[in-house]
Image (tube, rainbow, N blue to C red; front, side):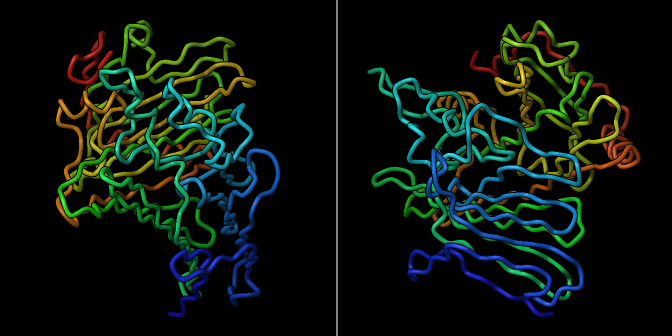
Length: 387
């Protein structure tokens, strides 16, 4: 086995690679692929580092400047991600996270996958004096990686990118995200292995949610979420109005008011679970695979407004529901980390390019559910929803 490694960023060692292009010829691979690293210039993207990976079948973009998020993806003609009215990727210096409304995070939101956390990941929360304490969805998605490395295994065809991102503040949070994103030549999937480590000399706590977003054309009228559901409840009274169609999508509608549903999923004997978003004809889809013990909560965000305003849905596995931090702490849904402690997450994103793949994914989900009828709450659960 021969593994070739390229360090793109190492702040401590003073290493920074502005541009890099790799392909089969450079590494002696038998199958075609491309990897490129560049720094964007102009507009709100000025200074953003992007790493574009095309394994010969699946292509996706990693953004080290934005917490190692995934910006967009593509499997053949199937576009993964969504079209946000925000022209991104946006450099974090243009994202006013701590503006008084607490909603500044939205100024940079256009990713396929963005992590929410690590200190908090839910709705904005203010202290008793009305000062913003926790902004919407936290800070990790707007923190740049200080160490980034690429590797390629010439024997197995494995492409790997690893990044290290710190979320620290003097006197407060001291957490580190180390992420490894892996794909193989010719695969239709990518795998994410994350470790969140407590760097403090004292016990710490964390929240984490994976905001995985899809829009048109996958999210067409009649699209559907398939999941092995144990329990589902609306976030608020507005979502409760459509509880009977919580996992179905209508056509994009200008002025649509977002709806959110909280779920507990079933898992197999190995703690594995998955969800499937399929288009109306069942000819394309995407699956998220993860472990319920690592990510016990699942949030579905439906925002099928006009295409111009950002028609999108979010599939969001997390350690908690995206309520204000204090509410989630009261409900015992924050992760406690001892000194040097780590929380590990394994997540797989699989793109499905034909009806047979979609059908097989749906059948696997039905096997996990094993005929269990989901418990449907018609009003918000007081222990799940701060609303």
